[in-house]
Image (tube, rainbow, N blue to C red; front, side, top):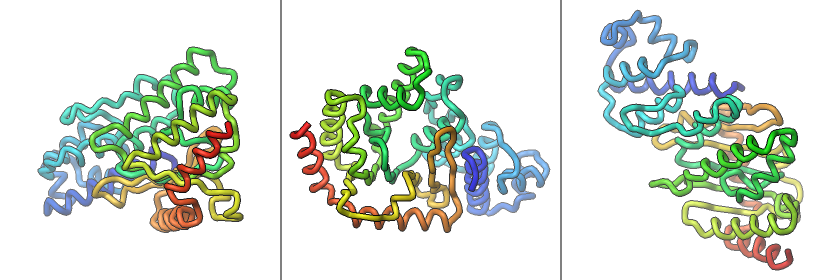
Length: 287
């Protein structure tokens, strides 16, 4: 179990080590090409040392890496924009407002190709309407000035751009029925949120399933979680568990396997996507 920055250092080091291997270089040879001591390459690859964006660029050049997506992902892991891709990490504008763990979460979310999430209390952030997001933010952080609440709602809205990207994020959601029985924001706001869920459930890259009360006990009783997966780099997959004041990142293979199996079993117990849409429609008609 590690927190975001430690996980990202390990992931970055593992990927750089793999790229060095594909380039046919030893760590000593790689160090010589960039003018470093071999120990620096070793510390970076094992995640024991932080790394700057300039260092990553030197190594990518030494390893003759041409894939822009891979470069972009590595620069995201180091917490920097990649000047070669021109991608802007928009959440940096909110550095003073967002905790480091939330910025890490957004960074991973923006680079993932597939997100699987179990939600037991609220609608997933990527599917929330602004009004619903405002009500959730107010409930969790009621003492914030209105201006900061507005900014947090805007962050939630901006995160949803991944669903409209090219290619879009693939999103698989299992949502406990309790989420759909909790009228967050009041009847009007919640009716709008139900309509939003029906809308996004029709998107080809979104799979939305409701886990009904009738399913009884299930592994999801342990609480909500998110699994991030990345294109072509399975070793970067990570599970995120949210707490009130922080997030916990799990990246051991046994942790990933356990949560993947848990999510798969929840999908089996949940209603099909078609029946889930009908279930939500029924709630909307009765709202």
